[in-house]
Length: 624
Image 1 (cartoon, rainbow, N blue to C red):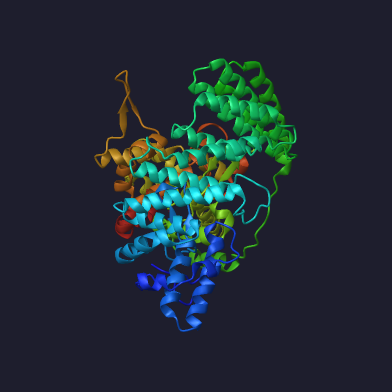
Image 2: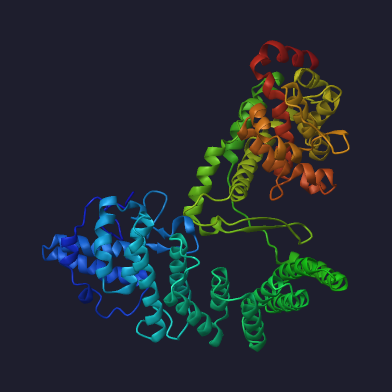
């Protein structure tokens, strides 16, 4: 789909066939007069302006040709993403500009006829590349694109063209994009082992220029690229990378220098020179420590220290150094706690609480027990996914990775970034977004509905465990022999003793899930290698029997259970309690209250359909 004609930037109409005659009517040299850059986005504007001028003169065919060339030049060039080499110039959740796949077959054939005649090599390379990208039978266009990419590199290195941002003679990433794409095309046409001399010369010149000018980031990339196409050897890379890394002074950016030592270590490893590989890895770790020394935040220092420990463990043989670093890590993590701060978002839920109180003040006890379970439904995963994607488009920080710090200042969990903005994010990214969304929903639910309902109930009725046997005895969620534990836990929940409720109810969840699944014909145990059988834990169920759990409980509810009781980035109630980490304060947090209430909901939900006929009379009798 193309961006609407009224939107900016307007880059042409994919439905209009631009003919060979239209292209013959343009004056490309005049349109690009004074343009001495080769990046596509710098060519877009003058071409688009030429199209506008042609339209003003009434030369619409010429305007179409200029506009199509501008569109092709404006594609995002994603060389390191083989699935989508050419991306749209503008894209959001509603519309996007044209991309290579929008070029029709007929238009592609026209472009194949005119590509070789385009005077500017960067534009010629782009047009020929798009033609071959859309039609792999156009092997001549592949040759034109490769030759044009080489011409661009040669003229950039000789000073005919310049970088659009940098004045220095840098081997920048744009040049490396051009040569990498040329090599990709050769590989795609079956010429990986027969690379032309001109391409080899460009690779070697880029390698030599990056090494000679200490452009270490570019050197790392061109070195790995050259080796992957057998245009240099690991021995050469090892020597050059180590020599370059050793020649840099202490002011050099340590993360880039680390990349050089890592490259040298990889190269030495390929040569099976283990002693040299270890030496290079040790030098790489020293650059990580330099990164640590350049930051002031204890939290950042702790992060770099943790990275160093991991690198030393991977090498092996550094037990004493790791021991010393771990002591430093504990101290830094303790200092990092001073950097953490709370912030408050005012939220007025007085009207919602008032409505809950008014509702529960007029209900009988059986109706209270019913209403406390009947009002809720799990949030659909589709709604959570849509909200997460909308937040990604609207808020920058939603797309970034996250780290979760425990009360000791340690990184206890992390979530990934969303990757490429045009792709579907990783499932773990979605879960990180859902955690925030569901945490807010839980807070509102506890503050506006659950706590006011519990408090109002205990003000009207002396709630004790004797009120709950009718529920727990009939519920298919409560295994035999556990009814009294559930009843006592629910009584403590209503009484406001959330600590007792949490320690009574949360441990019951896992066993009850297994009980329900077994009764539904889904065997939840496992046979170990020694032929002994044991029940699966909650994590084992979620990992190995997720489809069966979704079938029995519903995918939306299983998602809620995972993110509340199991997921490391969330409250993780089941594990926190099982390992003795749940404090008295944690028990009174809205997540724990919500977790206890959710177990109440799971217990009552199967009974709601026949509540008035079978459950309510028994509760009424127990209340007297």
